[in-house]
Image (cartoon, rainbow, N blue to C red; front, side, top):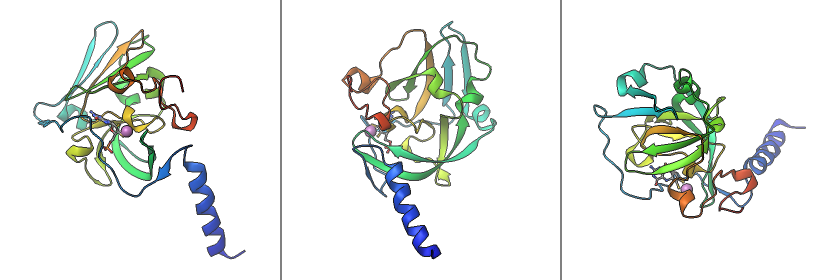
Length: 199
Ligand SMILES: Nc1nc2c(c(=O)[nH]1)N[C@H]1C(S)=C(S)[C@@H](COP(=O)(O)O)O[C@H]1N2
Ligand SMILES: [Mo]
């Protein structure tokens, strides 16, 4: 079997397996923001993890930049049905940020500059599944895409990847975020097509 033919069939098969139900692939990188892009000054930027005990862990930009980072290539799936394959991000794993945080919480509410929130189970932030990303495609993350830094949690619909992230609140009971409060799914697994509450 010639290599060209094998390559072609391989790509086609791969694309089908990588596209969750109801999604289409796009090469664009659409901007989806519920409000205006907040101006976030790096001198003022802070990222805070607040445990359910009230204990706070705070990183300023310099401390955050000093943490070990990883570069990941991941597929993105937006609930408005576009998927984008093989996007490259650099960021700090939540495993690193949560390492010294003592918690027995099960849930997280992610907060952004500009007041967006979104909820995720804490376990979905662990084990190499989520990053605070600050570079995209080899460049500083553009403000409209969440710069200076955003959550990246590619195994869930992209609304969970909070742009302009400023902190994570750990909770014993789940609290809904911005989209979840107006009918979007609490979990948002694209492979199970969990778009809306009840899906
Ligand atoms: N702070 C904040 N984060 C957000 C949003 C938002 O409106 N505000 N929109 C979400 C939605 S619905 C999607 S699809 C992605 C879009 O990210 P992008 O604009 O970089 O494509 O960001 C998510 N994170
Ligand atoms: Mo979205």
